[in-house]
Length: 174
Image (cartoon, rainbow, N blue to C red):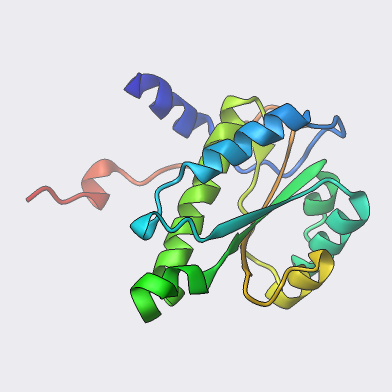
């Protein structure tokens, strides 16, 4: 089982070219299911997911993401938002400024891995104007956009896999 998980982790890549084919709603539901099972501090689950399929909204998101046009070209973009006050209710400032971000990052990674397992390509986009993203979708002030995840069926196979640092360089066993 661990080998299967590790292979899926290794297959995941940042995809920026998508076929226009729609992603079935049942598949999108499974991605959200994977996200909601991410770990969170105190099991507070301080997240909300906007599943954006409308082309005008995806175009608005691409503009807010510093004109990264692949965001609009993907048939779906999931906007992962944090709810800082949900975390702050138990963990005060550390919850507000750290835990809610860690929790939404875990949920985002689950989406990426589930997308890979479903044969979809995806990309974690963090470069965007939060206020513009919020305006595109009518996100209330108490939710903070943390990640955009454009996804769809890849237009081509991933070729040049990025190199990873050697294990000896990044790990210290004590």
